[in-house]
Length: 110
Image (cartoon, rainbow, N blue to C red; front, side, top):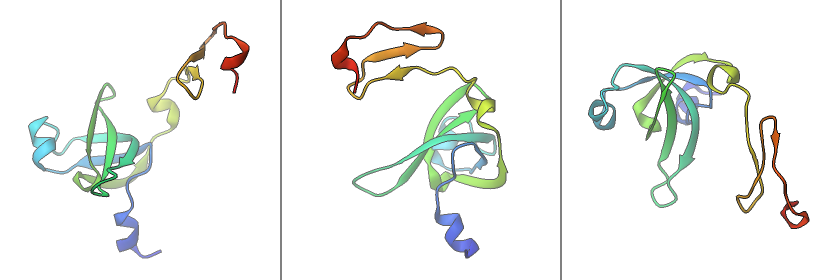
């Protein structure tokens, strides 16, 4: 695939990026720092892609994908998530948390 086309795709989750010197990164004093992408979404009105990023392993921010520069590196999922997770139903009811089953009624099961 053409390199120019690849650069248009948003960074994938767990990709390491450098935060470009742009208005939002300057406002939060993040310019030139490295971060890990933890997800992205598309603004339905503008079509702009926004990425959730993890900075310094502890702070999360949402910035436009155009403010992120790919490094070609990534980290394993375990670097970002410790492995614990919660299960929820489609309507948002808590079904289970790590090592703690949550009682649920039959209608909660989808």
